[in-house]
Amino acid sequence: MSQFWSPIVQTLTPYVPGEQPKLPGLIKLNTNENPYPPSPAVMSAMHAVSADTLRLYPDPDSSALKQTLADYHQLATNEIFIGNGSDEVLAFVFMALLKHQAPLLFPDITYSFYPVYCKLFGIDYQEIPLDEQMGIRPADYHAQSCGGIIFPNPNAPTGIALPLAAIEELLVKQPNVVVAIDEAYVDFGGETAIPLIRKYPNLLVIRTFSKSRSLAGLRVGFAMGHPKLIEALERVKNSFNSYPLDRMALTGAVASYGDEAYFQQTRQAIIDSRDHMTQELEKLGFSVLPSTANFIFARHASLPASQLAAGLRERAIIVRHFNHPRINQYLRISIGNPDECKALIQTLRLLT
Ligand code: PMP
Image (cartoon, rainbow, N blue to C red):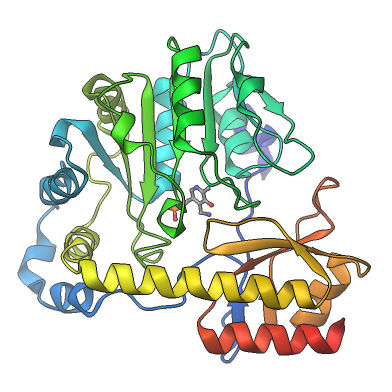
């Protein structure tokens, strides 16, 4: 029935997220979710939502969440944009803020949704190769005339972060285009670019509640930047879906910021497990890239990654293996809880 498809749909090759298997007992370390539940404060706030309010549309401006985020990050509410997961926020960024006269720049190894959005919105792009250590080389982005720059910091799936000074230099060198920094994983040890927002009107920082806030299932993301950048995103939002955040998500997201102690505790537990798991993998003959994320990217000295991924899968552990020629020797392993990490290491001991 594809004769009914529009020409653009025929050309799309959509992003395929990591599988979400439902088998009980499976150890799922393939999509960088948080192994810990959200704060109990989130659950009780959502339980307290009255049935009667669900009859009504939610606040189209998500004002309560904007205010919460503004207070926490020391910004004004007109410097914050809220969306239904950072994937949606990113879609709006691609639609609203990237100039189409010149190619958008991003790394050749990065979040695989970026080229998908470019194809969907007809944006020309150029992929800049990572260096030999799998890091982003900021100087490669300095002199290029381009329509914008986007990358995650820390990058995905490598987990390697750029220091704030490198981001600032990029903003100085490219003052005429939007530099979008996707900070999905920044809470696990990276340096945030938020302090540069008031200094550089071309900086946009994108965040998610899916990783460090344990709320991937709620779909909440946001962007921070100059009010003029935010205004562009709001224009797109209000031409598309005025109510991106439902009442439950709004309530849960606000409550999450009310429990700072829980956030710090779970964040630190993941950092500690990551550092421990890195050492254990190294003992088993893996080389592990220096991660500041809630996952690690590792390759074994002799065994093919595809074989290891299949072996783990047979033993009920799922990790991510990419079929991309530059990185098909690597496994991306999300940091689980201590029991899951232990099971992973024990299973790899059998396989290596
Ligand atoms: N950016 C990066 C770099 C990611 O890895 C992800 C999650 N896969 C996202 C954005 C999207 O996160 P969400 O839509 O859950 O907020």
